[in-house]
Length: 267
Image 1 (cartoon, rainbow, N blue to C red):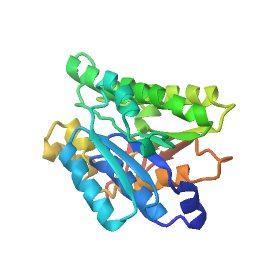
Image 2 (image 1 turned 120 degrees about the vertical axis):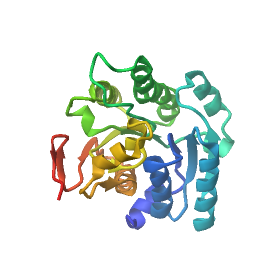
Image 3 (image 1 turned 90 degrees about the vertical axis):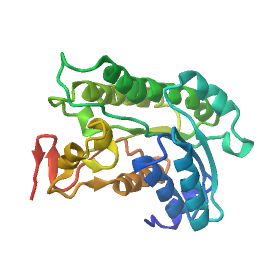
Image 4 (image 1 turned 60 degrees about the vertical axis):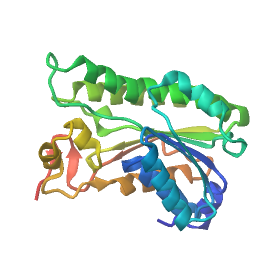
């Protein structure tokens, strides 16, 4: 995607931290930032799968020789490791400009009364507690220079609740409420809070939700043309390359065949 010279200029030399960067929207966002800036960015890529990050970094450097990439294995749920990680970043990566809170997951479709406690805790730990922790640890960097973008990966589940999604919906409603409050708290600064809330996106998401059941995961997208990871990545990069006076505060993004969790056309 090319956003034009002004967007590339605004992104130039930005330090961008992406959680959950080893696949899906996180990986696509790293690629999109490189494409939009011709590699003139500094990427910090975090995930639990180090080998995937190595592959992504190698590919990015092959396509964009001038891009700078720092990657580390880090589980966002290891809350106590985040601050030491930030403190130990190489000097040229310390002054983060954009935080993309992408890491998140849904686990199962059980109804209340049958939901495994480990699934409840797993979703809240990743989608809410880790997101808040990362935001709190990076925000002082933004406040010190009075600039920065916080990109929150929400979901249509943060607007619409549905059966079989009670806990996941609760986490995304939490993310939205947190983001709204944070935006209000930062109103006297140049720090922007951006929430991107996708509908059906075909990534590893459904495979994780259905715990490796590929048949069940495939049915989510059956006979539809869903969104893909790069569709959301384009919107993230677009939002963070606007002029400083413009905040894309919330974006609810559906594939053209969807209007809500309950309105999905299968053609």
